[in-house]
Image (cartoon, rainbow, N blue to C red; front, side, top):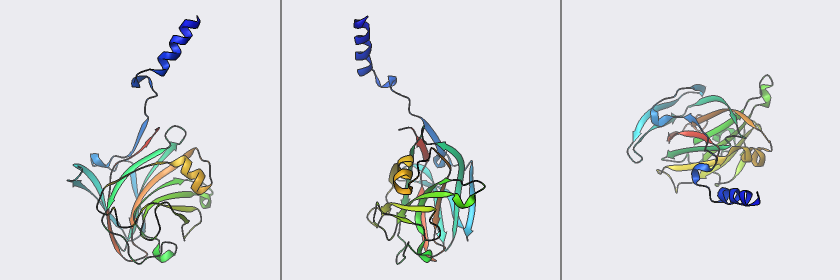
Length: 218
């Protein structure tokens, strides 16, 4: 019997890749397929124009967001189990920064690119929380700060500055870990994902391209 146990143990150590846990993928934004199925637009001030275009550099269809002194976002409501799929994967490309703004003030709360996760407060709407991953024009990469409109929204710069402008950037964030460390909340579920390119406060112009968005187990 001991030989059988040892043999099983050795097999587990040398098991082929197919014996490992299967990767779980939950599609959220299937923009390369040219669809906004499940997404809804929410207007804040003016409109951000969202269109599908073909990007020759990556040979894929992507979602183009153009804002001229406006702000409307696209929201995807879905209860995501962060115990099963904690990793948020996305890509974007932006071509210019919003110069001369202070993102800590209300008149500078604009971003060429942002994606955020939302925990719905339900009936207690004032308890709704949001973690914003942004391309910052004035903060350094890795910095976080409170949104100037509400302390319930945490801002985090996953990118900043002009060095990577015009290039596609790939991101992978463990949302459950980020909610713990950046927001101070241990949450198993989130309720929505949103993307936005907004320039309503500054009155400037910005264009950003968004690739597919998924949640994965690893």
